[in-house]
Amino acid sequence: MRREAVVTGVGVVAPGAVGAAAFWEMLTAGRTATRHITLFDATGFRSRIAAEIDFDPAAHGLDDERMDRYVQFAAVAATEALADAEPPLEEISPWRLGVSMGTAVGGTTRLEKDYVAMSRGGADWVVDRSAASPHLYRALTPSVLSGEIAELVGARGPVRTVSTGCTSGLDAVGYAAQAIEDDLADVVVAGAAESPISPIAMACFDAIKATTDRNDDPAHASRPFDRDRNGFVMGEGAAVLVLEEAGAARRRGARIRCRVAGFANHGNAYHMTGLRREGTEMARAITTALDQARRPASAVDYVNAHGSGTVQNDRHETDAVKRALGDHARRVPMSSIKSSVGHSLGAIGSIELAACVMAMDTGVVPPTANLSTPDPECDLDYVPVTAREHRTDVVLSVGSGFGGFQSAVVLDRGE
Image (tube, rainbow, N blue to C red; front, side, top):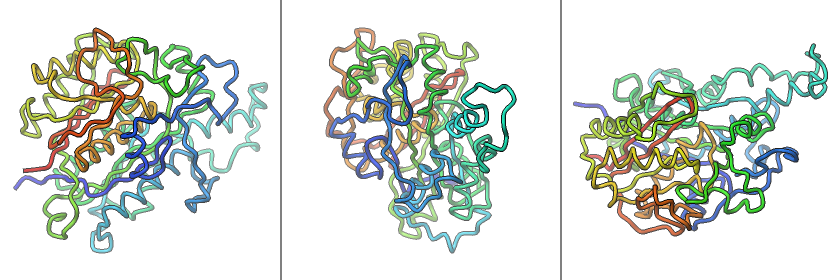
């Protein structure tokens, strides 16, 4: 019998909301979490706004020095997801318990902070290593993220870190499902985390003008699919899902939220930041994921869009969905939650999957906030401004990342 992976727990740390319930309430209310940057002095930057999280590590019993900010987010999200799923970890062999976590830029925040300290703000070419944090090495290696979560849950099975840019969160969950399907694990804690709101990261996206400079109106700055969009809003956060082998989850009476039915990713072999307009690679990822799920295009009830709010991405994605879903593309609701919580790079794919799970739970699809003036070239149903009651049995979530990464995940209610 084919092994299947199901979701039994969800945890979220997102801008404007710590905790899955608060996150979902914020999304469906159409609120946005974007504000002027407070984590550092952004004076002089082109983009001076971001979707930040009000987060106190001590309130969660975390060591602020040992764990970088993005790892703290992941630990809190994982703890919530495990409490939600209640897997009997004491009965599961640690060799059958896995971890799959994604991040795009890892410990960039701490790396930059320590470099500034060691070089006296960049004044010294030869750095003073005595000024470095004793935990600096942990910032250098993104694998620390998965290692910390593995230690948290006692996992000795397949433990991996996925870093595929902005598709990392989708890919980490997709690979986790594959580990269960391939009989490498029975339970996998999967998700992604990111804390990129720092001078170096913001400068990188300033340089290529990928982020919006609508600094005078932070709340309405992220405008996916809108005619007046001009870039994405940087965000931060984490989401973690608990995946279990379906048969075992049913036998223990677990609450099964959905099945991870299909996953695919492709590269475009084209350009580091550019996209071909026709969206062939994203379309192929969608059709491959649907084929794995054994679902026709017409079965998709909701598309959770990448929807970053850049001109080229939104048009590329619109064309890819049309190519993959055919006439059904015009009948299915499709929305971008980046309009509310910003774009947290590697973390956003898992945050979006958490939203997909809750859309299936509640029969509500979240809106694309701030979509008031549609782009004529983005002509699908993007659920503007207001959440919509809509039963969702099959959900498609797509992602696009610098480097040419294109990914798709299909969630459904199972057979």
